[in-house]
Amino acid sequence: MNETKQAREYSGRIFTEEDIVLNKEVAGTYPKLSQAELANTVCELVGWVQMNGKPKTVQCMHFMRELAEEGELIIPALNEKHSASGRRKGKKEAIRALDWTNTSEMSENSAIRLEVINPGARLRQWRTYMSTYHSLSSPNVHGNQMRYTIISAESGRDFCCMLFSASAWSLRSRDEWIGWDLTDRKARLHLVVNQSRFLIFPWIQIKDLASWALSAAARQIQSDWLEEYCYAPVLLETFVDLSLILLQQLYFN
Image (tube, rainbow, N blue to C red; front, side):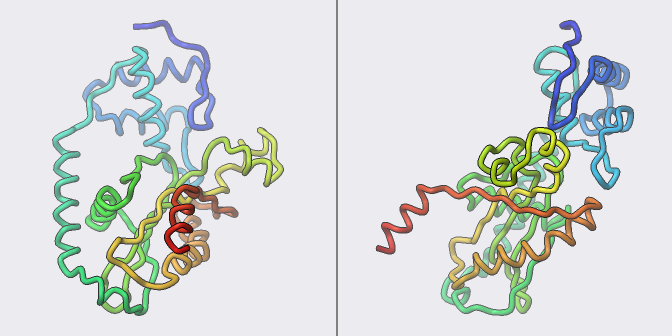
């Protein structure tokens, strides 16, 4: 084992030498706990929680993995068998959901609504949609997050998927536009939400669907985020692939 490192910053939190020692002690004292259980224990002991009081389990797990890779501590391996099983199950559910696909039918607009995706079968299906049809696949995001699908209120068919998550830690153009310094960013970054994934299924042809989905999410996310995390964001950010815009301009011209 290496000697304990000096205080370090991870995901916006400063971990002191004592905090890192505590990570090592928890991992060494409870070797039979899962990574999530170890992370929950550390979060409870150091008070690393979200605005709603829930532990920052995912962030802590990744911090402990980073320490493990550096030889600072030893943590149990993930249950790969369980993870693979979950992916296979989600894949089957998505395939069953797509059996009805018909481009000509979906080109006719109908009543649609925004649906929050919660853990369970719908979340597994959402992940499979992203993994199958999004060029960047389904992301492993950290911190607060909100997933949506746009769904037909009449048929229950899914049209597209969206993911909103924690904003980029450092982004010069955004920070300059807002006008805050490092201290401001540390204090208020949680109020900015990033739209990290947006997928309209390739067989869906509904005019203005993208604009409708984005505006609906912008109107609804404050109340959804407030209910889930006990605070409401005030700014949405997103990133655009300029090469795709150029391709679209060439195509339509």
